[in-house]
Length: 459
Image (cartoon, rainbow, N blue to C red; front, side, top):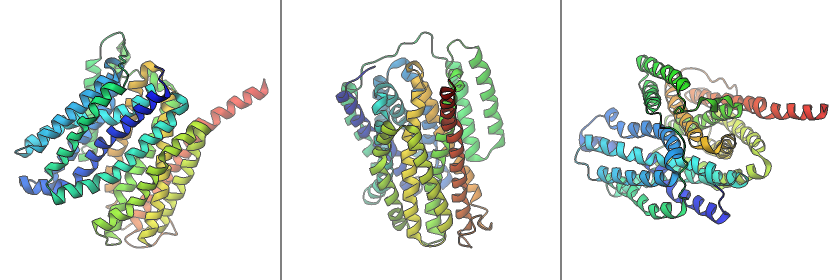
């Protein structure tokens, strides 16, 4: 659907207004877990399900909403998501006990998972390819800034009021509903056939088993998930109108974009998972100082994100990929080298990793979306978002296990010896993964263009 620049601008502004509610909702609740545990008299592990259940539903929503967008239209799904999110938030605010809180979080998750999912689909469907990179960059910057605001707002509302007010804040997302109805096109993409309910059920069962297997380190859940996945593949090949068209993965650019996006997302998540622990265990810093050291990277990346998207529109995705990987490599290698020295040096090098991430992720989404047809843009971007969620879950489990081997010496010969060695090794692992993305970039972006150039010269 061809829209004017004015309409595109309104859609971007709407996303920048709507997306923060989803991101802040994810980040600010972690601060309140001790208070929730104390009020309901439950263990920390039980309380963590307040966050875990939302993570599982968000992973499912990334796929489901992408698929449903091809059937019911984005405006209707966005409206449904905001209403469900607000209803779940109200239920959580008035909850009398922990079980009702979990029910409210499930309802809230069903609604809020539509926001980041559709935030990937909307630019792919409505924003012109010449301006899509900039749009995705602005959205990525908004997400980065919201990630900074989330813990701060959570601390303020929990400390000065009550943890229930975290959910009251989320109800303000209702203010975006009139703009959703007015600014998003009333476009329903009609497709022949019915939604593949059995295929959806199998892939949902696979995702739940996989995420729980990763979280609980349960081999039986992993095997069960693999069985569901095998059944899903067999069933999809027989379906005339499958839930996930397998022909999507025949395109090398789409497959490799998903792999590169998963690597980029997991390393960024890993940095913000392990660095606060480094600040606390090695440098003995308290929470407010840790937050202070993390803020510069997030703020700089939020400010520069839109320029990375604009650069992709002007110079091409390959150009931005190259810059991003160079910046990420320098950042991770520097973190590995300086872990154990001064805390402020870690804060400085975090800026490099955040800027590299915020430049690369919108360009990857832009690259992936350009390889999708209009008919498959919803499910295609849904699968892309799902791969990012799964990579985060896997990365979190792997890192927490690796961190237990704190007696291992650092691989990096320039790193400080002692307690910081294991953190240096984890950062070095991120450096290696970034080099893997460099290999993928060369093999699947540079080499195809070189082959085309050679063919042209020969002719």
